[in-house]
Image 1 (cartoon, rainbow, N blue to C red):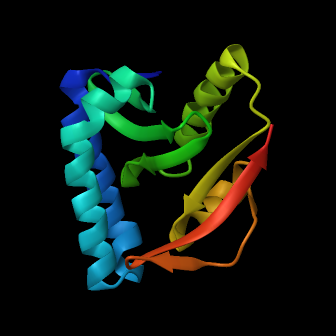
Image 2 (cartoon, rainbow, N blue to C red):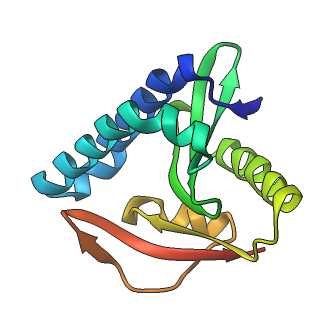
Length: 153
């Protein structure tokens, strides 16, 4: 079941993000990139309640009982800032289900014609399966490797 992340679950959600990042994404990053992401997550842990309350960021999780198996977060309504699924549950449709909830919410709220993401090189194929297309070549900022992608709605 996909639902918005409650304040009490934010830390657990970000722990899942960190675990998946460390195992699958960080291996392609320099030490600078790994530190940049770690600092980003620490900042998110401190800021996320305010970001969620202001609407600047929204975060959902895929729950199985009380366990969090996936996390998706949106920044400024139409940009995916986080999308991670527990390693034991890859390729089971969890990312697709979370994205569908996000898209349904966007359609109800406003006129959004596309969503964007800066995909890690590791996740490009997964985003392509979700209907995203690469819009620019791979880039690097502060050690973070990413591929800009867009999905038209």
